[in-house]
Image (cartoon, rainbow, N blue to C red):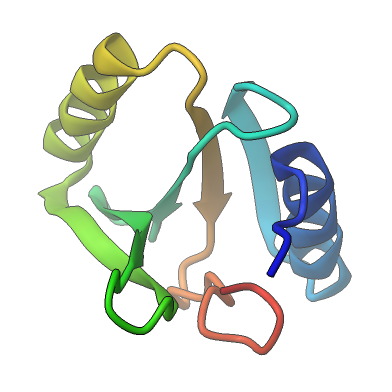
Length: 109
């Protein structure tokens, strides 16, 4: 199965969140074709989570997994380490006090 270019996926994701009134920001723009994506969810209370897409090599199933969570500063440090390893990495920040990120919605896997 062919994959959607990362830049197109990011644009669709941002539009979907904005349609729900959820604030989003592109913190780091990665490779438009094949860059990986990290999504940071800031809940506006000093806490955050960072999500990365994981692929089950046996089934091909893709799902979002928590990379880091807790104090927002610590999550930012974890994201910074990932960026130092992968300059093509996209980082999207989602700010929502209700904790909505929509990564579990159909079509965003």
